[in-house]
Image 1 (cartoon, protein in one colour):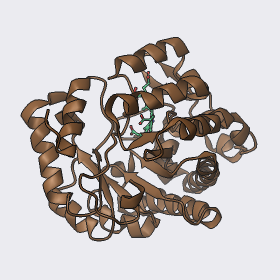
Image 2 (cartoon, protein in one colour):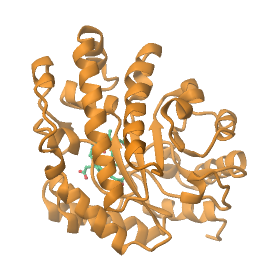
Image 3 (cartoon, rainbow, N blue to C red):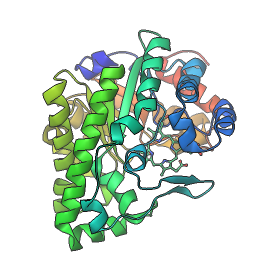
Length: 337
Ligand code: CP3
């Protein structure tokens, strides 16, 4: 995968899946049960290491992604993050006063267990398996901090951006700086590359995309590269559409993630500028059979002759059948079922 991030074409392409450690795996559900709360799982190095390794053992993916969550940053900022069964994440909604009072002082010590997980992972993974660290992009993390929960189109954060532009910009810059430090620590602990998840980039208007999605990610990338010049960085701006044309250049990232709505002809254009990652519809993995095979083949045909990291267009869902993932892996690698 690092070769591809350096611009090389590999056949078959390296392969991993967003959310590859998760509820579709029975062994994950078992460890999750043992951990009690979800955040407890993220902060217990022994268990977080175990769930990170589960999909590697089962499928032999080319990259392992650190098991954690993008919301450990607001948790470290004392925003009272909870994961309630069946509800997704809940936080205390933040206001202007609380934004101005945010302090980065305890973030690094709070996230020490995550660094311990990264160190353990690098020591236990096969040498050829890439270890991916990650964090959320400032915009996506901010949407949860403002609304206090997930929402269908992040209307609360978009509205806050119009009404309280100065405080919102301050929040994004603050998150960019804290997250850049967090990525540097992950790299120092053993991460070979990092991914920035901007899962909600697609709900932003033209100007807001530039101000809230692109600019803070660039600030993070510049901050990481100033300290770790060789850092390999992937950026995934879900729903960015046509704006992907300049996203790689504007964020100065090595590879860009593509969601399943990106036409393969456009993806091939983007690949002329550098590596792309994606973009199978996670529902094809749920469907299995011909729907899965056709989706895999179309991506390999359109993008297999350039630098490609095979992945889904967003996270694998809990309903996915683990045997369908076996089928996907074999199909990508050209192995018989
Ligand atoms: O395997 C991996 O990809 C590594 C772990 C990982 C998780 N979350 C574990 C998780 C990663 C990279 C994330 C990123 C993340 N978390 C994002 C960005 C990527 C995306 O999917 O858009 C976002 C927006 C979050 C915030 C978040 N965490 C939500 C909205 C939820 C609830 C929805 C859900 O899927 O349950 C979570 C919880 C979460 N994070 C789970 C996992 C495995 C499920 C919780 C459980 O096990 O009960």
